[in-house]
Image (cartoon, rainbow, N blue to C red; front, side, top):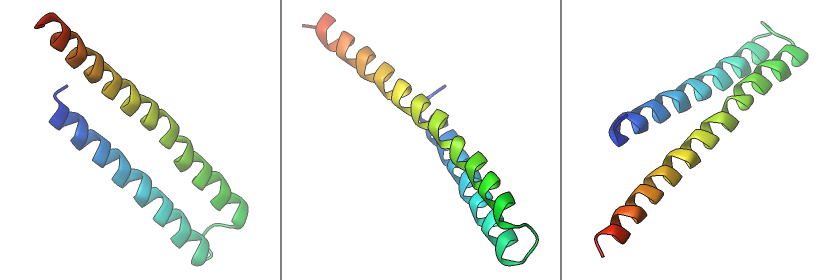
Length: 75
């Protein structure tokens, strides 16, 4: 995937996480869900952040190693 595509995917995932959090909070405030349901929903949304960061770090590490390798071979 091109770097531009990965940025789009990251932003799309971030938007989904934000929307999920806001929707959960709205449901709590409107009385649609209770406090325990809210805690579960926010936990699920927050648990999606961890794999996202792992993938971002791995992607940037891969780019760093690729760029570093090409710099060394051109010297």
